[in-house]
Length: 304
Image 1 (cartoon, rainbow, N blue to C red):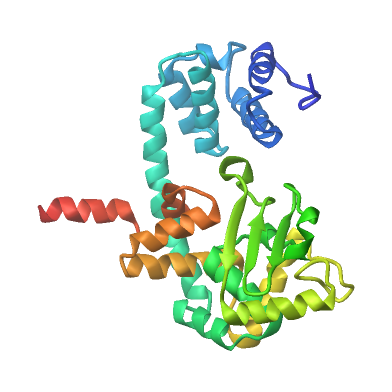
Image 2: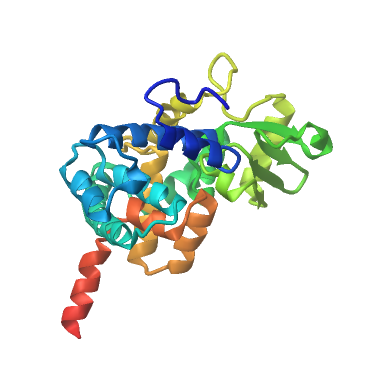
């Protein structure tokens, strides 16, 4: 058994870890442990979580100052594990998610207003960008990448022996390039992603980069690849060259494109974005949308 948790380990938690260590990622187990510890601090007795009634769990979650959804979710996980009834908890979680989606939509509207750019600005920047700026903008706009996705090695199609399942690559051929993502946020759930780029401008730039002999695509002035924590600042700085009043992180860019798709009712585009990003359409709508779909549903009911 690994030393994932060294203190405050109850028999209940130890039993859960032992039962799931082979099926859950280390990060997921770590998250569950932290949420479990927070939940235990809200319990007055020493009983196990899975022996609490659904009403007792809801009372705890309603009164907590911790993240309500996180505490509720860990309770659901433990009750499901022990095949205990948890339908009321699922219903309550849906209510919390609906409230969160409403607040998130309002927050996203404010973010879009502050971004200093819209979809047409993004496309204009892409159209006028040159060199690596064009490559960066193209990947962000067309493949909906996060920061870590952009840390990649550049290799020739003849050097496929350099490929592995842990890193990201841009494999450059004579007429097209293949973008391979192995190291991104949701890779454990969605697996390796491969996209072929045939864009003529993109390809011409990539062939020039390949001849430069750079090991990584995006590097700092010391020719070292940008770290994930540095990539956000790099993205903002490159867009400011073309859109001086902009404040564009990868997440804001994604929300701008999401908003454009929503405004045009382009569900296919939204589904493609979710697939490229590596999450569900439900996650995309709840986290990135600027539309309050709860209000939309209420308006539809009223109309009927």
